[in-house]
Image (tube, rainbow, N blue to C red; front, side, top):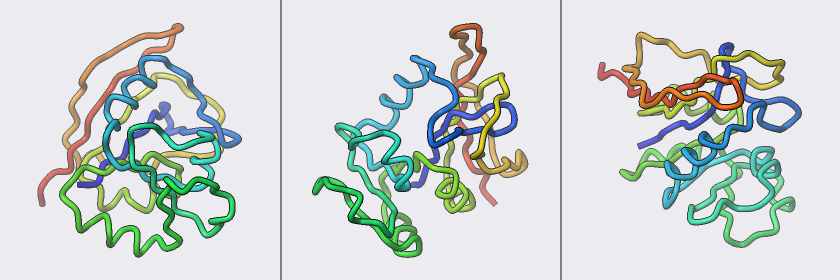
Length: 161
């Protein structure tokens, strides 16, 4: 099962200058709790922005620049097609954690999305794919406010066709 997990603004903003726009403590804790003990898949820029492998998770990085990763604990793929094929052949939940091009590549085959929907809009240079509400069942898990910013943890499950 392929799941996307992200924090997005009103206009699907993800980040700017290879960094997250919002830094919400409860969102960070939710991300950690949700992805712990799972495989997490990311692009090179996301990996470099995090700075090290995420603990207690199997870290997978899609990149053609293997020389930029100096950690033997990272699983590296250099082919999106091979990565998709391998991930579609598993029953376990796998999390796509960014960046924008990986969200775009996996959006059409994702089974589930864990989105922190932030009631704010900021300048961004990367965006989450446009969500077609007709394809998903949306459930709000929890509504929160932190530093004057309102946001909600939501889960989208793909409707059966």
